[in-house]
Length: 168
Image (cartoon, rainbow, N blue to C red; front, side, top):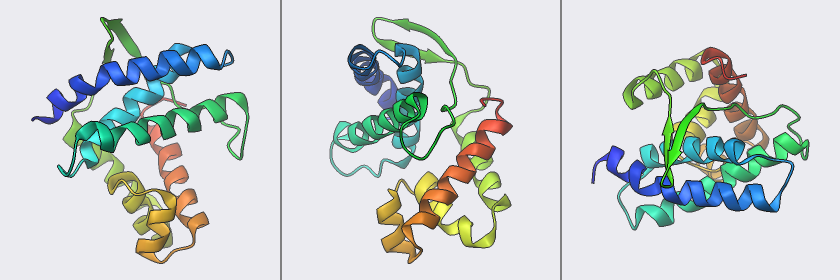
């Protein structure tokens, strides 16, 4: 199955999760949760290794991204900065349509270019979390870096990407 077909297959899952989150937590909007879900879907499909069902691989990553963004919006936890917002063009029959000016390969190149701008000790953990699909704890085990460095590296790279794409 192609990458685009996988994304189309997962869009209804993201839309349903966004609706559920928005209904349960009135301080966040459905569009904010759709934004988080769409980013997580694209990121996760790029990291999917073909082992097992794609939904089993992607679902926890979508949920995790939505929870992280929801906490940031509500001002809970360490991050007080609201998450980046992806422009959603339409939601028809549960399908997400988002505007992007880069194709997936260009996006990966852009992420890698941003990672190269980080200090040397942050490059390997940022690559493992953003491009390798590892959680901060998995990154710490694999790279031998402290978990705080793994979290900070990913956070710094995401902040640079948001600025570069005009999302913050």
